[in-house]
Each structure stands twice: as structure tokens, then as C-alpha cells.
Length: 131
Image (cartoon, rainbow, N blue to C red; front, side, top):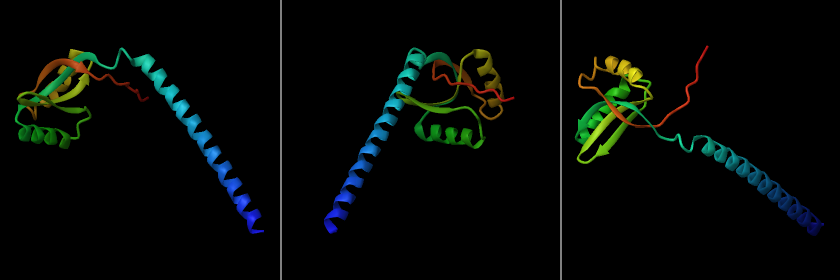
């Protein structure tokens, strides 16, 4: 009786492992295909020329302070800290055109009076319009 229960347990255990492995293999295959399709669509579009708004350039402590100050304003644009020897630069946004960047820069000038536009490589993103 013990041998029968043991054999049944081993059989069920092996079937469970095989099923789990098959599901994991199918999931990883579908995930791989999804990333391949994404890469084909966007491989030449991962970085494009655009604009960012530079808020600061200088030492790391002040750059961290400016970054924190910007984040406390609950801004909706991505903030970047870029290191270009010997300075740390705090830059905001990924704007595809100068007009859009200029509009946001004017708003930021109320808090960051030295803000200016920088033409650079940006990471494009998809915009979802809400009705």
C-alpha cells in the first residue's frame, strides 16, 4: 500500500513539473516574440533628436537639491541627472519639438529662472489621448 501511494505521488509530482515547464516555456516564447516585434518596430526609433529643459549645471549636491525641488512641484515630465565631466546637469522632459519645450520652459521659469532649452537625444514615448 505504501509503495502504491509513493508511486502515485511520484507520478503526480512528475506530471506537475512537466506541465509547469511547458507553461513556462510557452510564456517565455510568447514574451520573446513580443519583444522581437517591439524591437523590429522601434529599433531605429529608440533615441531621436529632441529637446530637454536644463534647470541646473554644477556640483552633485546642488543638482540633487534642484532635482528634489522639481519633483516636489509634482511635475509630469521626466527629470534626468546627466553627468558630463565635471558637471552634473538636471534636465527635464522629452520634447519632440521646440515649441512644446518652450511652453513648458516658460512655466518652469517661475521657479527655475535660469532654465533653458538643450537640443539632445531623447527617449520618445507613446502618448495616450483621453476623451
